[in-house]
Amino acid sequence: MPPKRVLICGAGVAGSILAFWLAKHDFQVVVVERSKAEQKAGQGLEIEEPALKVVKLMGILDKLNEKKTGEMGFDLVDQQARSYGIFEVGGISPTGTLELMRGDLTEILYKTADESANVTFQFETTIQSLRQTQDKVIVDLESRNNKTIKVENFDFVVGADGVKSRTRQLVMGLPEKLKCFKSVGAFVAYFSIPKEVQDWPYSRLCHFTNRRILWIRPIGKDSKMTSVHLIHGHEDVPTLRRANAAGDRLKQKEAFAELYSGLGWETPRVIEQMMRAENFYSDELVQVKLQKWSQHRVVLLGDAAWAPTPFTGEGNQLAIIGAWVLAQELSRNRNPVAFETYEKRLRSYVDNAQSIPLGGYAPYIFNPQTTWGIWLLRTIVRLFSWTIRFLSWTNLAGMLPDQQQNDFDLEIEEAEAKVAR
Image (cartoon, one colour):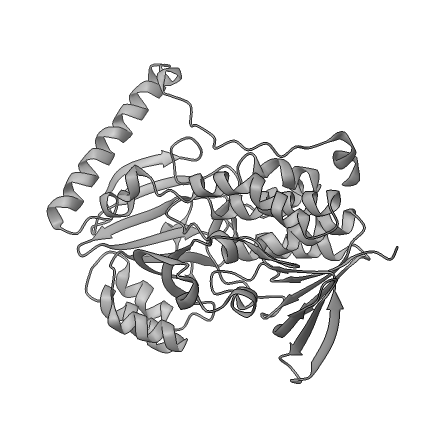
């Protein structure tokens, strides 16, 4: 029997990891990605257990450690740059022990997968249409460079193409029909600006009234750039919604510039550099909730199937774990039954991971509306920071509860561990 052919739409975290493992299981894999290979947009990502086991099995942990941002902790500041509490890396800190920029992570992953003769990456390529038969999927692929369309046959198609998945739309319909988008009431922007001395080694976050956050995070000690996150916690911002709907990057920048104008701290510098940033990305945060993740020979993976939003802190974890499970199930059942077992194993884990902390109120509690709310949050953070320091100085840190891991059984078998070697 000839090897099964799989088309993966999306060369992000989930798509590249899936390609790596499918190749190890003797599938022929084609990965298409609408962006250029050197695309570097995105935010910082963390890899924790159990997802960490997957990248360890891939043999890339050393490469990932080399690309760590080196961020040493988190510092909550006010408009005068006064610190209200520093939380060192690990533990309850927003800074993880293995923190990378999304662009660096995806580059390592795709290059690792591309080393296999069974994997072919096609950048600046999009899926235009697909038709399913009993035993194959016929796909029209378009090159964005020369606008040519190539028709190819695959045994399976995987949509790992993000929240606005083209694959999902082609197979299941528009989001409006599916009613699969659940807004979490926030607009975000990510981009990089030239680094200044105060941008290292801690990330710094400042709150402003009307639920506005500016978070500046290191990219690396020797990097000339630093990363910026803007988070605006509101259900409806007409100017941003119109700019996002049109995909107009300049209008998006102008909308954020208006929202953050005159707020103090680092906002003048950030706004000025944001208007020049080439890797700017902005959108409204939504969760994706589907009744089913597959249709016959087409299956969804990662944000295309279950986007949890950054408020859960689980997006990267789910992408890695989901790719592992899908590859594992396809290796066990080289037919559409694999998609049923993949969803059966993951569904409850994903549902739990999509839960926003504190009963869904975390984005409001940690991003206050009023001056009084911001003062109260800063006061609580300061007291908590002092408590952590006291416990550390008195060797009583062991009294603190261990951070609970949302564990998942990867079902790593001895034979599968050997596959990666």
